Image 1 (tube, rainbow, N blue to C red):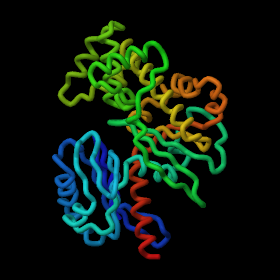
Image 2 (cartoon, rainbow, N blue to C red; image 1 turned 120 degrees about the vertical axis):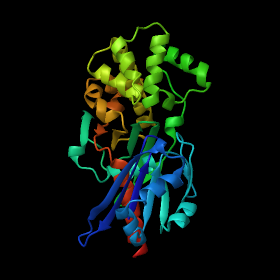
Image 3 (cartoon, helix red, strand yellow; image 1 turned 60 degrees about the horizontal axis):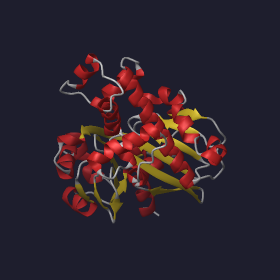
Image 4 (cartoon, helix red, strand yellow; image 1 turned 90 degrees about the vertical axis):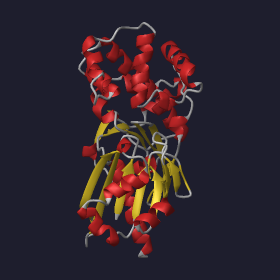
Length: 337
């Protein structure tokens, strides 16, 4: 089976073979920078240009591509790339059997079910409710959300676009941030703030609003040709090398925690909240320091409900790929009765 996780920054693929005991052996794995390609076709052509992937392509029984964007009728548009992805067209062009497209956080929701405790970092300890609803949230290039609802002996994954719901400021500073962003974007979604690009926007807001001046070292680091400004800001904040970066990360974490609490209330996620994406594992220790959970639980009379929900950071960067593999493997199992 072929599993793919295609985001706004990275695209990773894994081809696996099912063994007699039901486990899967990785035959080939490839990773690419998404923006190096013009469209999905050129990406898939690169995938199958190597001898190992090309050789096993005729043996693929099913494929699943998890994509960063809404999926409807096996067709998707990737939110941060603008790519049009049509499963029927890709399947025909590359001779892929039983190809399914799913949202990347739909895939990550399936992937959570395959994780063990070593892949989780606890932010808030609590006893999960048996059979309780679970939510899966992750900030990276964008902001994704999936809801896992108990169904039979397992969970049904409900994809969503909750990350594109309106940003909800919770204090005066966040009010000012909202007004600042509204000048550029009009409507301000949560993803405008809680994402990799969002951290850069928060930093720019603080700088432009006179809350501080970035250090010369930080500015020089962000101007390197290969630099990701958001990663540099987070790096300097974690090392406490730049006071403005520290304040930006604190504001980002507070907004992230508040958003996660809103989603937990919306879904009544008594089964737990899992925080994933490209950012959370890198700042997990900082999230643990309290700002995230403080904002998560700051819901007035509903604070006791929120304090009773376990919250984890998912440390496995391939949780979405694991989920896509489970979906592709499930298609094979269904086909075989």
